Length: 439
Ligand SMILES: [Zn+2]
Image (cartoon, rainbow, N blue to C red):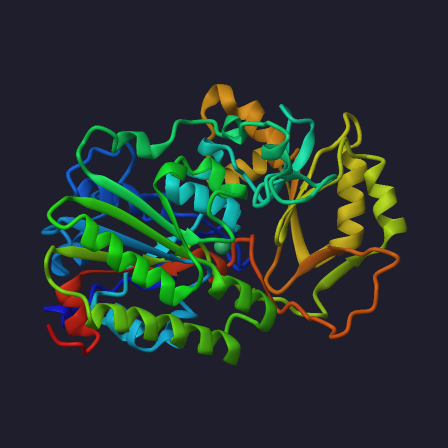
């Protein structure tokens, strides 16, 4: 029955901004932010958020993989696995093809901070409020690195938290996981020890149920222990790891290093599945927060310190950044100056948009009274770089490195490679069969 395959060609689920421009708007009806609400719904919890079950095609993929008949759902979020990268996993890719090739859209911007909070809140960034990686927050009067939860002026990890700031005040809407409380469904988050209870994880609303791991082998052994502990009880388990993202940035999204990392993930996951019992009916939902794009040296726009000084005089704060997206906080009356500076410097390599254009082009719908707040974070102008392009602010005195690192992958913008991620979802026994592990 799986051979029937729903013809869900990835690029059909998202629309291009303008014909031929290569930038796409996110699809909110088939989005990464609906996976965990869907998992909650499969466990009988009303998530109060849109699920994928209202999407006929995705619902059919889940039905055909027996995801409706489960006691447990394990969501595996692998950072930076796009539709083009999935074939580097081999067996998981084959399983995905047999499961109907369901594709999900990420959010704008396609950065970890915004996408991960979307995944855990069931909302797009303009609703939960983490609208970028390094963006301005007026309550704090600074651009905050939301992965580190520190001002960019004092960027050491957790600086805000350590100085007594409850960073949950940055969220514009309540946490999704409140809906699980009192339902009898257990909830566990499994995260790398380098991330658990630090930085961004403070605002996911799950610190009390977080278990840490040291590496991927430990992650899946921990998952085994969690499944054993909650035998007979409905349970939602989310596992997150970021080794795929780090390698993709450094060596490139389709590099040999990425392929080796993908094989490692697959080997450990398949080993786990092969040796898992059938005490409970467990569904697995493997997906990602965003993909990555190769950056090209020719399309890298370098801004010297002197050139940066020019634009800084028109801004209320240093610009924010979400990878290949730059956020400008513009002084009143200086809009034309900023526009001129960006057009001269960036030219064909990017698209400068006003906040209103960002909302229009990317179909963002901030809630009426919060529109001003979202604008103050997102920026008065947002520069979205085109395929392969990046904007770099250079420092005068950069120390020579022992080994010169070239970062080959990036994300944040809205090209298909960044926006479209696969969803591999099936009940454990079905997945084992598709992966050639027998029942
Ligand atoms: Zn990410």
